[in-house]
Image 1 (tube, rainbow, N blue to C red):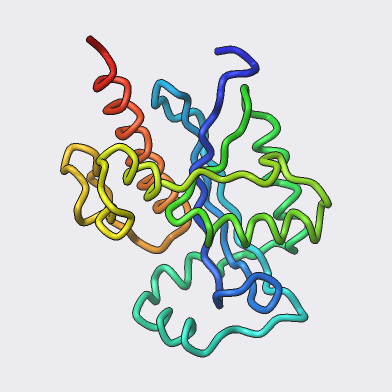
Image 2: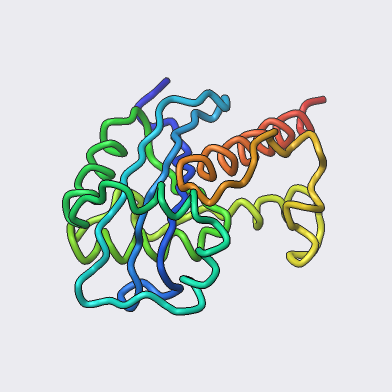
Length: 190
């Protein structure tokens, strides 16, 4: 592996609302994959809620349907600044160039980017994120509306439950993305 080879950082977050800065990120789960789809390492941390934010009632009502996931994402939280320092230290310690990957990237990256800007004033990802659904759309030639997980080829989907636990879901979406990478390479071979 070269230091310029991309490392895909599949990241999933859990939160108590929809808008970074108004609501708090509660958990980060991340899984680092090589372009060859090898899992390099994982990272997870729970964050204390921001003191200047309040949970969104609709999100809290949704969490009531997932009490085990709620318990796991709120157990032993770290101060947000420490949690983000740990996340960046982990990303920086990986070989290669980090690429943020999520499903949907616009949601997860918005929280990560906000917290990185607020607490560290820097991001190992710059301002870029790779969206798994958009990549699926490109590979299948489908519309964005049709590029949903339920409509993907079965061989792309990992045999993992979607638990709403950040690390579990980061592994799930990372494996899905890696299977699409493999399918893309195979489709280009003569």
